[in-house]
Image (cartoon, rainbow, N blue to C red; front, side, top):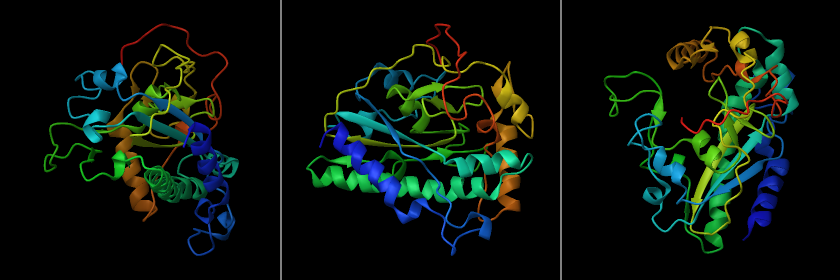
Length: 285
């Protein structure tokens, strides 16, 4: 299997899978029946030996708990990252509702993530079928995420982190750079979701078209204004605690779903790289 083959089977899966569409059985309301969740994916590739994966272990970036690709899969030769942009239906739905997540976005966040999971499993199985051992870090039994300040947690020494980061992996793979909201801005924008696979198949690393970790962010402050709970500022970026508390509110209001995504909608980076993005050379996270 080569890059083109991998991208084709992924794109076919996204376009044709019934799981990428909201059925009557799971729809919150009739308004979203038949809605497509994601458009075609974009892919990036990196070497497990990329120096950034080692840099991520520094306390000022992610921390020692971040697991290097070689720790996930010793004989790995490639890290594959993909981004699925949300459909216009998902994005426009969330733009209409100003304070709370829309029905469209709630489905995009929950059913969308379930679809990402199925795509990861499918691609992993195809790689293994071709003879290349592969893993999906987020499904591995060693994976953990600490999404709040929780003294009772097994990882109470850290907060709002995990031992594998989809966004950081995507950055290394050349898919994009970070923004004020801490989302990753890709050539298809920030509104969507990521997945990744580590494999023993060698796929040549792509070229990163940036140097600065915030290079694609115009620092315009549009996401600051969009946040319904003032969790983002030009000076400090995103306050994870404020954001998390609001997500908890949405989880209570919209059980079994939750979400927000206001910082990704109606902003210059929603579906593209802003024209007036940063050109400062800044290599430190």
